[in-house]
Image (cartoon, rainbow, N blue to C red):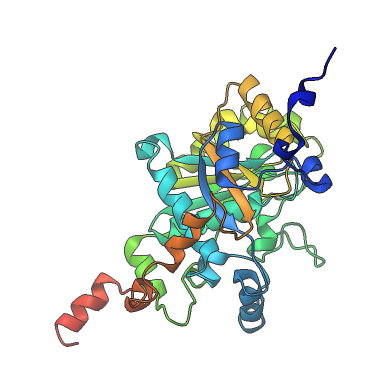
Length: 344
């Protein structure tokens, strides 16, 4: 039998290098949407030596922190703009009552779901919402590291505030366990933008974090009961928005037990790293649980001129030559405006 390829002239056979032939990752927005069948709500760019992370490290020496809260520390960066895009995209999915609880997950560890959950929560708080960020990755909690507070009993034996596990086993409730982040850690710190805690008070925006708490010996067994659903219901009554950072789907079964209690589920995919088959498998497992993800967040996208990249960067550059709109505003509370109008 003659092979099919023998009839094709060699000049028409596309050349594929060894590395490209073996690479089954997702590299562009268009590729993600066409191969996975889900919309990409935001593409967070890769941070380079000239990008927001290196700038953030320089700021960390002054501000005394070491996390990557880009919407706060580098508000004019493409990464920060990507999270504002995510905030806007999810706001268009339906009435507020139908999208109050959002859950972020990934197929594999190391894709940036905690980074995404934290910055999305901060973006919501900056818009004036009262937000609760729930650290639902009970096996590898991260939010206490991102927001710099202890998660377990300290050396002095003094108990720190309880967390998710304590709430699930009935030893605490959401109201007492949630830790409010000071307004100074939510407001923008760019030298060209003035945003005080006064405006947050005026809009009512605030962020609280429910840390993982003590390690649960059997997270899946605890989550299989009604307790996580009760926790989310309690949180939804106390806050305008609830954001859950959950475990990787292919690593443990915990997330599959959490997703029925979320109204919006987003999968974070690390560009040029996560295998397509891994993401497809994660989507399949969610489907078997009756869950269809709302969409994707493509993280650490490399800057390029290729199709599927450009428009995410074009929006960041828009207006820079004509005065940079974001640099021309100062945010003030209504009381401050009234005082100035009255000559006070």
